[in-house]
Image (cartoon, rainbow, N blue to C red; front, side, top):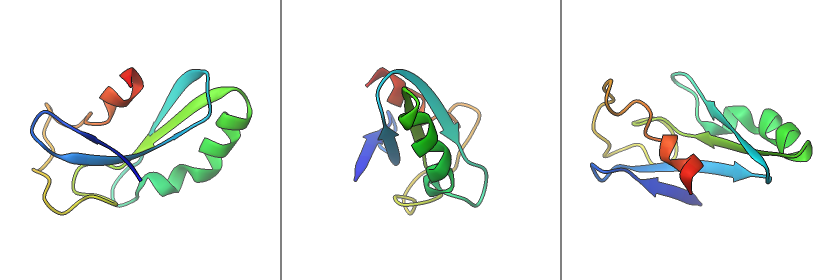
Length: 82
């Protein structure tokens, strides 16, 4: 299981499939990164790096995360830099 730790200590689960230019998928409430599996597979098979992350308090590692705010809503954005 892959995860990234944000500056405030929140751990966010993500999927990272394929190689190439990154495409980031961000689900809405109450889904998880799993909602994007068909799209992730398609993009990875067509030469892209497909990334999907769980949002704070949603999904695989949800229980102790602070509530999202305008400063934290893009907790998965740092994934592209990895």
